[in-house]
Length: 401
Image (cartoon, rainbow, N blue to C red; front, side):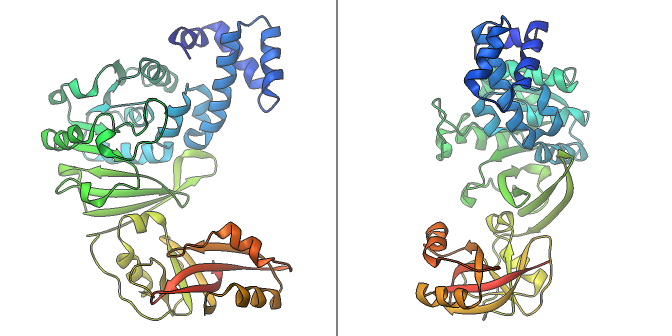
């Protein structure tokens, strides 16, 4: 999209085009485009309106009803912070006394808008002109344009001495849209981010959940966040914002609003404690991915009085079926060395026609295994592909709670 087309979408004619495109949502794209052009809309405006309608539909899962009035690029939407995560982060910043914030690499403005809604004055910097313009439009749509302003420019040149705190979300995609896994190739680059945490102690850095623990700045808190059991991001809380070496934050979204949590649970710890190892018990506990990423499996095991059956596999076993907000609980029915022939015979004997397959420490492909099992029958079970004392093992179990 060109900047001129974005400007056109914000005019009364553009609003009419967006409304017309919304009326064509879910239909054949070619027919929808023809219908808009039949209304006399220019081809570029019709195409942009249809694209925004589709992106807004996808964005509803991240931003809730507010997505209907926002503007997006495909890459920007994929990288944007979920509303429920941005809302919680903004609340933590406000509670820490932050009053002015620089958002370096503000993207479409998700985090900045959430912070502005708490009363924080936000100065956003975005290198891409179209994304910067959309962020400003989104601030206006959210009613926080007086507390969130956007400058199109180089984030590394912003005068950070003028604010209380900094939030930095380095771009992790190349100019072609491909994911970037090397922090040195982030934009701004990682060496700038590290230096930033030294110049401005009150800094939060959003990173990919696969970030290496060795990259956590000295003294910072490393937090991993999951939303409805999906790990979505990690963040480094630096200086006075650090409250624990490692934190797992587990959010469950409210059914009516994806920007508000229905529950929020946190687990903290040093992140370097080893969990005890023992034999599998009557119950298997599958810790949330954020707990595993934060290296807090030992802390999780303590909440259920459990042990690991293999020191490198994050499944926790106990003799007690304790439900916990930090993960799922299963009652174990069978533990057996993995054998496709034996497993197929056992499931057939029990009339199992549906299986949920979980795996850690196994190279097996769940989809292929499901086909190879040739399931038939009215019952269901859960299969856990794992290792016990280094040996490939399958655990049959059923969910508790």
